[in-house]
Image (cartoon, rainbow, N blue to C red):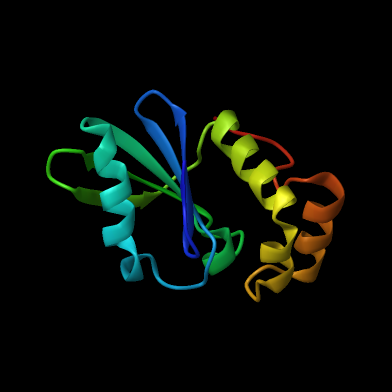
Length: 126
């Protein structure tokens, strides 16, 4: 879908979008670009943010509502995404392992786990 140096956006399900941050910059630094990309939906969507590169594993997933008419992402809150979103995100990072290797927020053991297993999710609670 949409990708630049700060994020990757993928439409996962109808009305569900995943934004993967690919840089350590604060989300506020490029939220206008994300909102612009999301405005193509012209409808309400739930947006999941994977902030693994910026936050590490403890504060990885957040979600918010986006009203396509107002260009406004609101109510960002920590969440546990469904299995499909986690799987897409894991595959993305396995295919772009250099992002993991360059991240200072991800511990060495977690980097090893991602490289070997392709995921950080031992179990999925949805």
